[in-house]
Length: 386
Image (cartoon, rainbow, N blue to C red; front, side, top):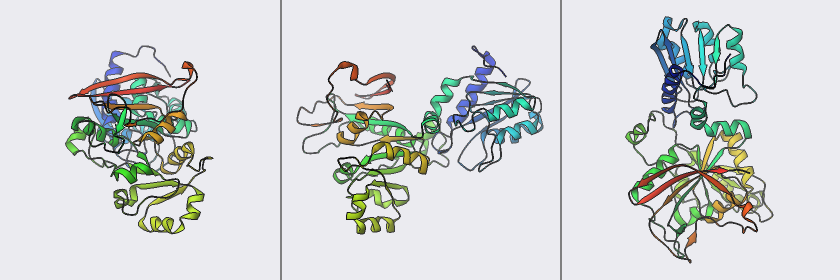
């Protein structure tokens, strides 16, 4: 078993090919991670595969099927440690052992602490040479949400902001369509496609009546290097502490994808509304409430991870909910679209934040990406946690 500080050029080439394959499953594999596999024998590709959907064959199995007898004495490049347990499919490490591969190169170990390292150990016990941590940073970035859920029990939280230059999201009267341009809104839909759930607050639902759907074509997804086959529509999550969700809301038109979080107090007072939502097929969940009678945000996130296997969620909400996520240090990354327009001091702010007493209390960010979208600007920031 080896952990190369400087992987060979050949290993990096083939692992990056495997990661390109894994990327194909970016909008279809959830809640499973996106995984790719390439099998090389005597310098030639003899098999390739990528995990396409939960419950379907894993990348290694598909690559081995293609390689057939050429898998013997070959090297397999896999973007995630091969599984060693029976789930919906048999263990992949057993398939690699049975095929007679000579060497397995892995980008990253399984982030699930209950099984991490077991697949590697099984391969080593079978006499297979294992090389780890090749292109590990790219592999972790590809499945950052899955890593977060496995290691912390909550999803990775992205906050999407679409604002004016002065960080406003609407005029004082609520008018907001449209601050950003069509290119920015299209990019926002591509972001939705990559998340397990889109989270909003009940005030945004009542005021804007959003659909929160992914409105991009299959060609749009394919251009990103993602397969449009078996694309999975994200859950729509509404935080509704007093169960005010109108039964006529557009979100209720797709009840199988709608999740509502409320409080026991609201459930008691709104028993008939609760029954009507259940009749529609909406998933209504009760979580603990704050002293202000609002749902506990961390409880919502933990529940989304545990019960709906959400790896990542994106917040699309007004300043109250967005600010609350920041105030509780629950935001992991920010996607900020800004338009060259100023709305003034009376306009609604993107973030309603608590006041700070000292600069060291400020949240810091690291710029990860930026892009000019016509006359709008997109930036992606990673929150630097203390």
